[in-house]
Image (cartoon, rainbow, N blue to C red):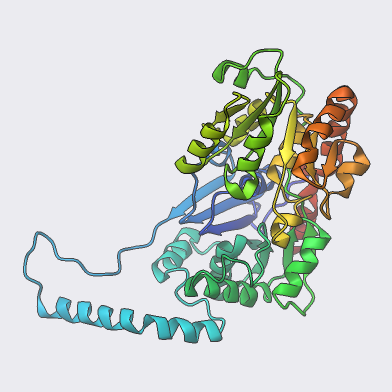
Length: 427
């Protein structure tokens, strides 16, 4: 390491990453890794984060310290059925009264765009204790919950606040109309975003939508970091699926990577696969509810579908993807979050890192895929077989262009340099 930033005492300057109410994202892990490799001490704070997908790179890495914060138990309970003393009974009745008033109180907080209570007080107190009075260069709030948490800490211990947005959920998104809590999350996102020194988002199109939806009128520094992958292109071929799923060597493997759900066209793709040539297979890799897995199995009368349901560590994902020949990167177009995914799709970046050409819908933000010649854009699912045949007829060129596109657009270390340069201004 050379030319590393240093704090006033010669120690590593500190950056805190906050993530809450969301699955642990590869961007969180990669951000921590690059920051640590660049000389920062990285404190990662996680609260109610789904980390079911293993990401070992976040653990035991030099310069990275992970704090998994848990909320305390606020509602009093009796032990062993013993009688409760009067003071404890009063606390219980007080808690019940507050619970009855909660809907009205939540509505008032929503009108005020207050984030009070969204991150429990004891979580904030634990966070402050873990920080131990140290100075931080910046707090980076990852996704909405992380931003709200970072914003609450910044009010107690002021420092530069940065919002790292991953999911472009506008206020009319189904998630935000589902509950009062979700609507409060959106209002608190807007309130805290307005206080941010900088915003990290994947590309200018998504950035403009985000700023408009959050009603950001003041100047905020925009740092564009596409959803990317760490490391160099992966050229070695994997036999992972051929071993695990019993796939013959001469089969062409087309993969649908990620969520196995109707919203990812999995039922339609399983039906489409029944007309594939006999040497083509469609592999679904990811997590799916038992009901959707059962439906796919019933559709697959021609045995043209395989299911790969074991989730692997982030570092082992290339081994899975390199088992495929073509990758399907298909999203709905009902929301801008799903439509504008040309620079925000993990499986797109992974596919190109592994030299696997893609087939995607002809959406805005995907123009570079056509221009770089690393995949084919289609307007309808029925066009997939013809697109796959075209790729297979010139596979070596499509694959080599996929590697070049990865190097050009999707290397995380290169893309994150914008954030490092901004942070260095704060040191």
